[in-house]
Every structure is written in structure tokens, then in C-alpha cells.
Amino acid sequence: MSGFTPKKLQFNDEAREKLQNGINKIADAVSSTLGPSGQTVLIESPQHTHGITVTKDGVTVAKSIDLLDPTENLAVRIMKEAAERTATSAGDGTTTSIVLARAFVEAGFKYITENRTDVLRDMHEECGRIVASLKRKAKAVTKGRLKDVATISSNNDPHIGSIIAQVYKEVGKHGVVTVDRSMTSETHFETTKGIKVDRGYLSPLFINDHKKDECVFEDTHVLVCDAEITNILQIENILKPIISDNQKLLIIAPCSPNVVNTIAANVMKRDMKICIVPPPNFGYRQHELMQDIALSVGATYYSEKTGDDLSLMNFADLGHVARVIVGRDNSIIIKDEESTNDKAIAERVKQLQGALEITKIKADKEFILERIASLTGGIGVIYAGGNTDLEQKELYDRIDDAVCAVRSALEEGILPGGGVALWNEAAMKYSQPETVAEKIFADALRAPLELIVDNAGLSDVDIWRGNADESYSYGYNVKTEKYGDMYEMGVIDPLKVTRSALENAVSVATTILSTNAIITMARTYEEKDSNNAFNYTTTLS
Amino acid sequence: MKPIGKYILIEPVIEEVETESGLLLTIEDRQEFRYRKADVVAVGTDVATMKDGDTIYYDNRQGYKMMLKNKQYSVIRENDVVLVE
Figure 1 (cartoon, rainbow over the protein chains, first blue to last red):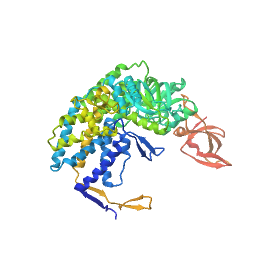
Figure 2 (figure 1 turned 180 degrees about the vertical axis):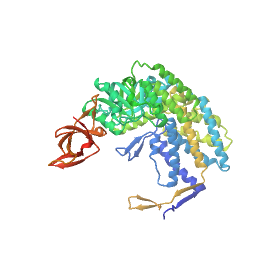
Figure 3 (figure 1 turned 90 degrees about the vertical axis):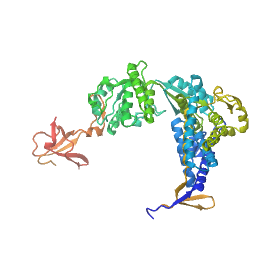
Figure 4 (figure 1 turned 135 degrees about the vertical axis):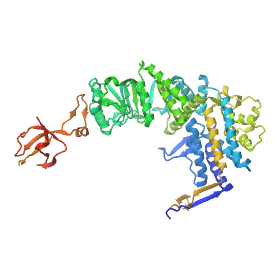
């Protein structure tokens, strides 16, 4: 049967119903986590050490879902992709985008009777209008609001919220904030002035802090080079003063295995203080990042591309930093207190800002922003603590989410949270919906708020009555059970999150609503024994 | 037993090599050097430039290893030797 794969075909309503089933399943699982009264979800997962994950994070729940029915699973896969897109661009809003997508699909089935393609096109236009309207209403994040944004994104944990706000206050708007696991049960943070390199040590033999599995040097020289060091004698010139004065050296360069071995052997046998880290990223980005690193540590960047010869390098070409912490996957370089090249760095930041305005590609923009951030800002690390592995993982996910949300909020501003922004959009724009697309939007945009209220065990009516006042940010705080201004009550969402959730949801919904035929691989499922174990076979080949 | 003609029996010297900076080189690094140090155990009947017990540097890529009285030696030719100490 080689070259022949039997397929199963489904059409029209039968096909769409199956897709809707799949969407409902994933939405049911994910939607219970939405809002301040969101519930946790238990997942059996092969990746986790204990085989169990406890989470309130929509992405984790969504990612873990695969359905047996191939058609339903197609819908799940489309949803997962959309949710992940929202999560990667905005760092949050996975649940919202899934809930919205389901609402759009449901409303679509309800209202679309004819002219399917026209309606779908209208939906895209409508989506653009809503996004524009949201953008107009968004407020920039002030220092005071930062804490509220952080708190709401960490599922209303004021302690985490204040930690994140403090970190951002210290590292600045462009600073890098990362999350790590704490060695103790305490959740705390550290901030530093420096740069982060997304690469760790080349050999575990460089570790000198065995408790944390890190290589830590104070008062260190830095060699920055992008040409591969294939022979240890190439850098003999540099090593001479380092070794004779028992100094420390961080090498950021690609090294052949024998060079790594030689250095490692010397670190072990002769107690030399040397560590090697490969250059971050690839291609032209590597080149640019290395230039940035060299600039901020005050080193001369030796590059293959400019025809530099490593053996001509001398001691003066090395940079100097106060401290380096080299981990398994990333390194943090903390600059000297009085760095001599602040002027050059300011100049480079200016150039990058110019480049940022010219470039149109999103990925390039992000890359430039990252570079500006690493040149100007500091680094903050939040350590998530927990008494058990499970608790720590849950907290880690939540802090990670919240940090992303805060980053998004700083970028595009904030809106009233808890689904109120979308609900009010629906209430104001579509009080008398005319076209089919408007009807769909009028229904779907209310879904997140209704779900949050539902999760809190309240009935919708309570909220609707409270919203008689036409103020845009007026709403009901599910947590404190009070009506009022959402901004004042600290119930807020980043615009970027709401926007990406909406855009991705509309994109999924229109894909599903426009589907007319589904082709899947034909499969047979045989029931085995009485304990319901499935024997799963595809009829491939 | 005595080597004949231009053959020389040598015993490679195994030593730790250090660079000027004090960096210890691994065996791997040392093998990258073409000429290696050895002690002459016995010279062949036609060899006049060195005598038994001399320390020489020879071409690492020439010669073969052999076992003699449970000990490992190398056999090279006279023209594989570049330096005599």
C-alpha cells in the first residue's frame, strides 16, 4: 500500500460542527482559569518530573491538549497556534484569545446564513475598527499604575505585583527582567547594571560555585572575538599577563574543543581563573550583539569579518568588568561602577534609535529594542520561590506571565481590565447591530467579561445593571465585589494583550467559519480489553 | 640486539609542556607539534651523528611503535631526526 494514504473527508455543517466541538473542548479547559476567581487546572504531563502540572496559565493548559478525534484535533491545533501567537507577542492573553475565538465561532454559526465570504471580510474590517478604538482609549503606564498592572497579571497576588514593580523601577523602562527559580522558598529579586548574554559556559569544568552551578568572577578581564580560536597559542599573548598576575579572564569567542579542553585542564590543575562563553545568536545578529558587548565592556572587538588577527591582540584590547556570572544557559555581565565609555554607548544608542525608526520588519524592530535595552538598562532577575516543586513551577509561570504583561503595558499602554474594555466597546458600538458582522462582534466581545463573572459565581445581570453609567472605564470589580472606575480599582489589562488576543481570535474564527471541507488521515480505533485502553493505528502504508 | 643500518630505537619522552605564560598544554595540543622529544635507546650500525643516550627531537609522523621486553619503543630512521641535544 505504499504511496497510498486513505483519507477521511467531511463537508459543510458536519465538518464545521466537528471543529466547533474541538474548540469547545479546549475553550472549556482553558476558560476556567480566566479572571481573579479563575480555577487551577491539573495536567498529567510526561515532561514534568512528577508527571503533574498545576497551573492557572492558559498557555500551559492549551499546550497540553491533544484530542483523539483528528478533526476536533485540527481545531485544537489552530486554537493552540493562535493562543501561542498571542502569548509570544504580548506575553499573556492566551485564555482571552481562546475564549474570544470560541465566542466568535459560536456567534458566526448563529448569524451567518448567506454571503459567508462578505461577512468574514466585514469581520476583519470590524476588528480593525475595534483595535483603532482601543488604541485611542489606552492610557500610558505611570509609575503608580505599574504595580497594579503587575498585580493583576500575576492573578491578583499583591506580593508578586510589588516585586515586579520594584524591579522595573530599578532597571528602567528598557531594562531586562528575567525570572529564575529561587534556591530557597523565598521569592525575591536582584538588579544589576550590566548586560545579559544568552549563552552559558562551554564546559561544566568552569563552574566555581557548585551550589548554584555557576562560574562567578569578580574584577574580570573580557576578551571579545568572533573568530574561532583553534589553537591555544593564538591567545598566548593575552594569557601571559593574565596568568602571571593571577588575573581572571572571560573569553567570549567560539573555541575548538581542544582549546576548551586545554583551558579547562588548566582551570582544574593550575587553578587558573578563565571561563569561555560562545558568542550569542547567529549570523549578522551575532556580529551586532558582539559589537554591543565589546562596547559595553570596553573591549576591542576582534572580528573575522574585519580581518583581525587574534595573535596580534594584546592586553590593552581586553575589556574589564566588575563581575560576571556564567550559568549553564546564560551569562550576566555586570559593568564597572565608573565605566569610561559612557559617551560611546550613548552614541551607539542614538544610532540604534535612528535605525529603529527606519526599519519596518517587526523582528528587526524587536532585535534593535533588545540591543538598546541591553546597552542602556540594567538587569533584574526575579527568583520564584516555593516549598514544593509544584508550587514553585506554578509561581514561576505566573511571574513569567506577569513580567511579560508588564513589558507589554509599558510598550502600548493599558485599558480597563477584566474584559470591561471589550464589553464596553460592544455596548457602545453595537447597541443596535445591523450587519451580520456587527451582530457577531456584539455577542463575542462580551464573552470574556461574562466568563470572568461566571467564574466568580455571579450572574451577568448584576454587572449589567452596574454599567448603566456610560463611563468607559466603569465596571464591577469581581475581587472586591464593588462597582467603580476600573483604573482606580487597579483592574487593568495591557492594550497589547487585549489587541493581540482579539486579532488572533478573529483570525482563527474566520478560518474556521470559512472552512467547507476537512481532509484527515483515515484512522481506526479498536477498543482493547475492558479497561478502555485504546489501540491507536493509522492506516498508513 | 642492535638496530642495523640507519634505523634508531628511541623512547619518546612524556613530559608536561608549558608555554611561556605558564599554560599547561594537553596531550592533544602537544600532538599538534610535528617534532617531538625522545631518548635514543640504541643507534643503528651506520648511524654516526648521534650515540646511545642522546636526547633528540624527531618527526612525530614517522616511525612505528614496537614492543620489546614488555616496553614500548619507537623505531625511526636517521633522517627523521632534526635536532640532537
